[in-house]
Length: 417
Ligand code: ATP
Ligand code: MG
Image (cartoon, rainbow, N blue to C red; front, side, top):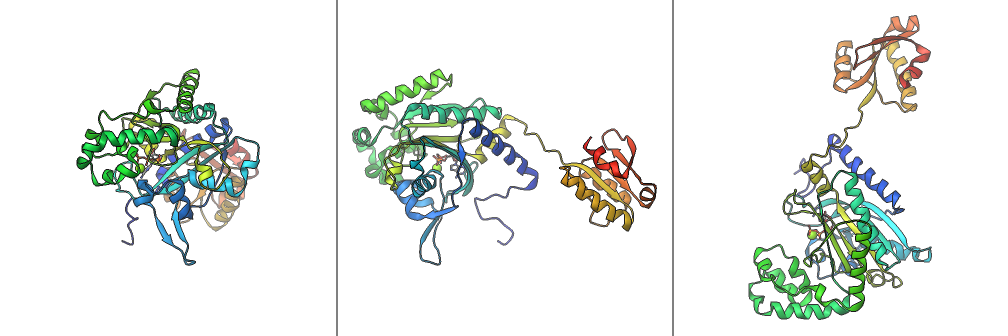
């Protein structure tokens, strides 16, 4: 127990963390180019926010939230997704009073009590963006475009972009009725979860992972045939925008999304390289969420992208993430006087932005050289009493084995060179 991380969580060890830095930096850069600003919200929120925002008929709220009572008897939940907290902050700080649209991005841990498996964890990480304030389909295309460009920038270009419209509350109600009518005589064959969904949220049945339910929904009516005029115009508009931006997509009426707040646009980027959990990025439009959470009626659109799944795809496609440079200089010392000089030198080098290291384990000089090798140091500086007396040290280039005598006062200059 004591030395095992909780089920469904993963340590990110120092020899892997550079990959995280790499994709996070690439994401931040992409967001910068698209003029999104970062927003940071707490790791936990009032439970009510998600119950209301995500919707209490969703899997997330019904059975996946990490909810607890704090010492002040408040119900608190670790965030299972990123959008509702951003909406809460947008409303709380009256950001709607600023010039619109508002464009946010975030990189966050998310928590869902799920059955852990490949690509499915209890603590996982998302990068996401949101645009609030415009219902123009340019925003939907921009959100999709950012995801697409970001993935391309990592060398991932074989994902399928699937888009759909899940309509608005008005046309969706007509559709739900049609769907219920279709499923009526198949009801007994549905899994228990879907029986439960039948009345409350029948569209979620389309997304059930159980093979029997998948079989039963074959041939079901599709939302696209039930869109009202407004929703249909919007979907056509989106497709035109994507065409203009030369982003290819597949219209997939099966994309329904797991959160209740979506309206109109729904989309996913799917990989066929990482098994059943192939959706790396999912998003869509949510024109009623901000009002639902207590803000002024404000449309929104965004996506969430799973970092663990992204790294799995990078692994599967053999896209190399460059390993960072380890060490510029190792300072090998012999004797107390040399050690003290080494400490001063190391500090100066580090302040100049140079990665410098010394031994602190009491290794002899041979051991220090070996250690420098292990650390993959580019240069080694050798300092002993002799060197100090003669006012010069030798700097060894570890790649070429070339050695050079350098006066003490020129060491920093020489290394920078
Ligand atoms: P799925 O259908 O795979 O459960 P979802 O619809 O629940 O996904 P979203 O809520 O849209 O997923 O989250 C956005 C992204 O976050 C997903 O596309 C996926 O990459 C990632 N994600 C979601 N749940 C998990 C999880 N439990 N473990 C790892 N990544 C996850
Ligand atoms: Mg899910």
